[in-house]
Length: 395
Image 1 (cartoon, one colour):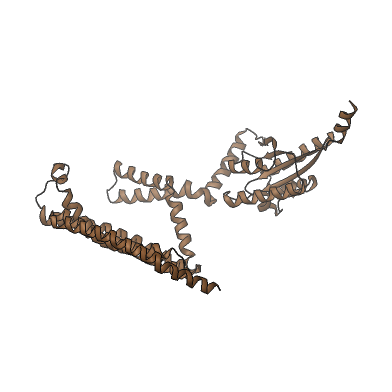
Image 2 (cartoon, one colour; image 1 turned 45 degrees about the horizontal axis):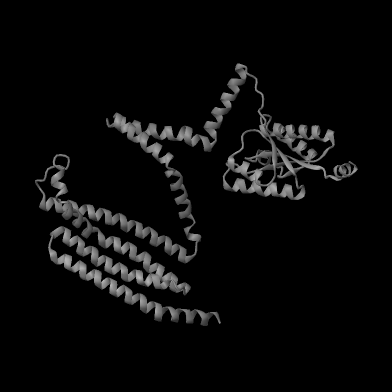
């Protein structure tokens, strides 16, 4: 019995951290206080400054609630207490989460808490919850809801506040005002020229929803931001970006060249052909010549688009003196044989002559033999020489 009493008396006090989380850093933006804010008195002063700068700020009420809880727990005297306020960044996101994680680690390094009571002015995001729970045991979460006067005057004040937010804060105005405004302009133009119809309205609405739903607007903005950084990137990176754009444009050109080739073939050989919906069998029977014409008209652009990327990779691997240059060299030979093979296939589909089948077989056999020979030569001769040069430069 006495042994148990001694163990209880020597048991360490429990360490409890009262943590206020301000995800969008209202405390820093409106008062200039730097987080983390440690201690009961400093948090009290910071909350008072925040209320003086914005009497409607809910984060200040959360900080006062944390001070009140600190005083209540301090009266019992059975545990060690610490009060801290941490903050993220406006707009949230990865940078905000990283800032919160860094500040929580800083607080815990000075006060290694056994448990934590989280106080916030609203629901936390999943990422912030994961950051806190991965570092300390959370025993309670208190979401502070500020009581409002349900009178008509208060309702109108809140409504006016939301209207000002929608009008003057870009994050909300671009969605609430920008998208409807753009739609109104387009619909007005269509009405002016008598082009408006239910189908047109549905198409416009579908385009807007698709752009926002698939994040196309965000992707375009991100692309423009990356383009602005091109002048500040290394020369090889700039060359790679140029080659990527060139390859993409050549692929688009190949698509249009194939379509134009098919249209020219139809105009020259199928002038009196019925529309596809009237006689689909007629067009399905001529799939071979149409596909062959498309292939012959577009394959050159496709091979050139791929070749410039492969040649750049070959140059880059030679610059690095990497053994991967073997794969790039073999890829150039592979593209040559693929070009010849596809040209023969397109000619066979268009004309239906068996001589092109014979050409395809010969090209396939020669390609296998040549690619195997090139691979063996590069592996037995080129690769050892490259390794010796690399070692020589290293010494």
